[in-house]
Each structure stands twice: as C-alpha cells, then as structure tokens.
Image 1 (spheres, rainbow, N blue to C red):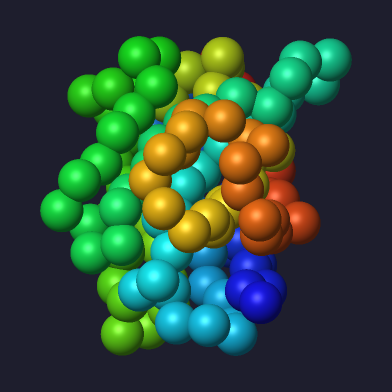
Image 2 (image 1 turned 30 degrees about the vertical axis):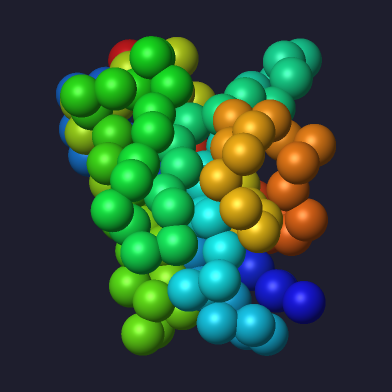
Length: 124
C-alpha cells in the first residue's frame, strides 16, 4: 500500500516555473507507474504526465507537452513535476498517483493510490 504526499505547490507568476515533488511510503516506488493529475475548480480531474517504473517511458497531456517534465528517483521513493512557462490555465490542485502497470495511464479511475494534492495558483 503506497501512501503519497505532494509538496511544492504555491503561487507563481505566469511565465514562471515551479517544481512539485511527491514522496511515499509502503511499497518501493519502483513497482509503480507514477503520474500527475490536476483538477481545477468546477472541472474533472485530468491527466498531466506519467512515468513508467524506471522513467524510461513518459507521456504528457497535449496542454503541457514541451513545458512540463516528469522525473523520478526510485532510490528516494520520489517523483517530480517540473513546470515551466506556466499560464493561469495551469491553476489547479495537483495530485500524484500510483498504479501497477502502464495501461490506461491517463485514466484517473485506473489508479490505486493518491496523494491529498497540492494547490498551484498561477497569477497573470
């Protein structure tokens, strides 16, 4: 059972950068596909980025491709989301999530473990 916690949210100006971290306890991160999702007020939770178990395969939502980067450090049971050139549309609560296997990595319902989320607010 993975217990996840996100860190690093806050207020950032448009065009700036922010780095989110997620750490966990329980099973080693190396067994999980690790992903980031986000949810803005009044909207459904949406996929942001995913990493396979060793970080060799990553995928991104079109809206963040080229601006955000997911990485992981399995030795530290940590996954990161580097957010660059942020816009007000990136404002949301960001969640890290873990699942076994890479299938349906973009589907929130396929994940077994979630952190409580961290708020990211981008000012214009």
